[in-house]
Length: 623
Image 1: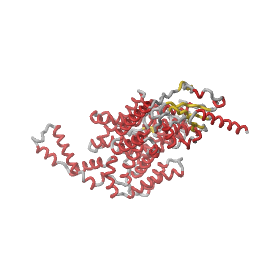
Image 2 (image 1 turned 180 degrees about the vertical axis):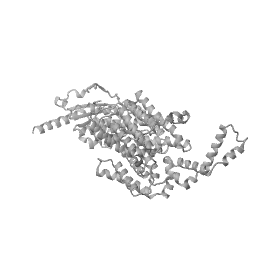
Image 3 (image 1 turned 135 degrees about the horizontal axis):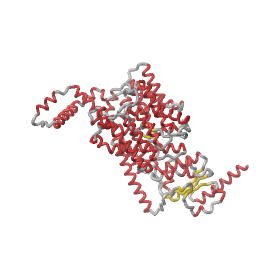
Image 4 (image 1 turned 90 degrees about the horizontal axis):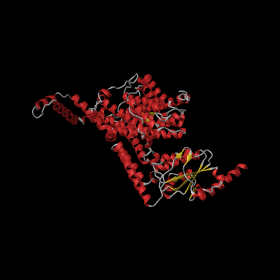
């Protein structure tokens, strides 16, 4: 317990800061999901608290994230549509699926799947993240313009014929359930049809219009209507929010610009009595468990979504563990991947029971927490408690936030979540990796997120197998990367390294890279920085036996070299082959991080160069 509170001041400040950053995002993700702002807030409260308490990354801040919300939105829309647009009727099935997501994650952690999550190639991740950003941008265009299809009477009226057909089908289904044969008793069908009111038809048309305008394709089809029915007040509120978010960052980053925009724009809109559209009402009081998950459970209602729940669980696992790696790099610690999955699963399970949307480790919130002083699990728990206090004390106030403000916040999230690093590198990456990224991007936006990732993984795996077959065919010698035994390297010394001068041995560290450096070997590659002794001033990377590098591998190498250069450790490369050198030059590892005079064809040239450099350094220090 003493260790738990060993950094109380830093954890308190980190947790409070991360909680403040999470507040507007939680509300925005809740609205975007289709379950309302309270669902986002409940998810942020419970996932943040319990994922921190039971997880394996001390500084991780968890909650609803853009990727998880994007997939959840599809699940929610599908089930609500299947339940005639009745959210209350659909809610037990929706929350049951979210509960399944948490349980699956607990199972994944328990059987040790966490250590395998790293085998996701970079082009797939890049295409997926960019797709998430594009989807958020497109789906937020309608609320940014202040256009809501279900409230457009002309648009809704187009669905009245279809609504009548749906209602008639319901009547026929009810009669079949009662044992009434339509052809034998057609008068009964006519009698029931005559009792249908115009209001019933209109309500059904509203549901159908909402379903037709949902998602990316629905938003694109509804865009002409939105442009001809712009609510300029809503548009101005949205644009001002975006301007403040980006503009305030130029003034200071000490205060989250998202929160500043939320408070300023909402305060002005409410204070001046502007006739804006507020978000849905946030219930006051402590969240109440939704026991209908258990009392109204129906296997038939969730069976079609079991694969989606599994995919959502894996997505949350990937999202969280990628953030864990970032936290490790910042804190120089090592997370426990399987324990982290169990913690995320517990958090998502409890959030689902209380009506929250699922989430994962959030990169921005985690970075904010670390920079503000958070070091232990207590920081994430404090963030969750802060959000609970906001809910209990400021629920009615938060209900007055303009919907356009949250649309503006989500637009900035969509812009920020896209992988610009991967997009900029497209002209210089292997064509097949670019193709995979584009395929995942296009299929995710216009078809199905989950299937798109699966297809991307299959293509990446097939291409990797082909590449390795080509390497083997050309008689390239491929050796596996050897690990660590305690703190001692198990690598053998190469022949040309035996007679290194003693003065050099005290200052240099040699690392052998054997075989292809691809997405499956990046974890081992990241261990490199931890293996280098503090006494080393120069590092030699021997790449004589690396015939091929993919995008994941070259970016990992870039991060490692950048970290070494920041510590004042100069990196030298020996024997790099044509394909890896091409990538290194095109993403500017050479010459921006490593000057060309530190890239050598053979080991002897490198040693001669270092010998002169060390002599010059020692001469200069003596003088």
